[in-house]
Length: 195
Image 1 (cartoon, helix red, strand yellow):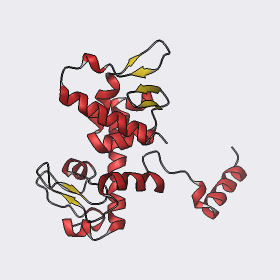
Image 2 (cartoon, one colour):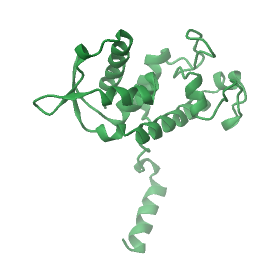
Image 3 (spheres, helix red, strand yellow):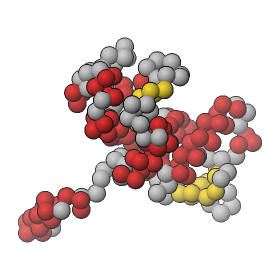
Image 4 (cartoon, one colour):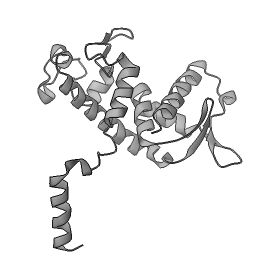
């Protein structure tokens, strides 16, 4: 590629920033709205205290581990001031900051999925209990938002292939009912966020 071609690309990006695709760990507005609706009906002030700890916070119901992974709190639940979020009130009272927290959390999950090899499954077809779907980056991220990157990786590593070379989960081989329920929640997110 010569300097003129590079210059033309740079001019196009500067003149039309929407032509630059989001990194794979950033959700589109449609995906954000879908996730926010599923988690809290879109309520930036939602606070689910069940499950202990600080609970699930905001529109995207991000829990303690997610806030730690994204660098917003430490293991003592103290806010670290990242992106000027110094308290739970700062978090609740600024929707733009919650959107940034989601970006950082998704980025952390994406890195974990990548490191665990989960991205190697992208584009593969799964014959799920509620229908056939393809594994996509948005599906993986939505599932890891729900259950964690480690759980998603565990689901993927338990998939088997059928005669059509499609993946499926053989739930009859799993004896732990909690694991079955977790895998079903992951599968639901993978399917609902396929595109």
